Image (cartoon, rainbow, N blue to C red; front, top):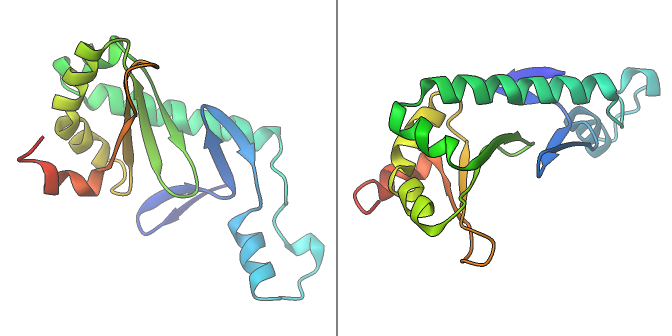
Length: 155
């Protein structure tokens, strides 16, 4: 189920890790347990997600990815085309993961992270960006889009 909370879209109980939708307890179910509410089991949300939930999760991520890409300028679109990238939704935040094929592309993406973050922030202010260098060339750089203004001058 898609919910709107604080002007942000959330998928109730859905987590996506490394491109795969996985099930977990619904936040409403966890909240009901936390409060020790004596609700009839039929009144609680399902503990496991079904195939329809996974399909909705995938469709939401594809839609966000398409709109994000279309809102990027030509330079950013070219950078994204030269990398592997995807948008993952989870219970904490939306995350853009960019995996760079080489260090030169990695530096170009890092130099454009402010522009990328500004576009991503139009969708959700709690989003994160993770820029991954080639496998043997270092550790990923991760930043929240609400932190970008702090680093704007240094990036």
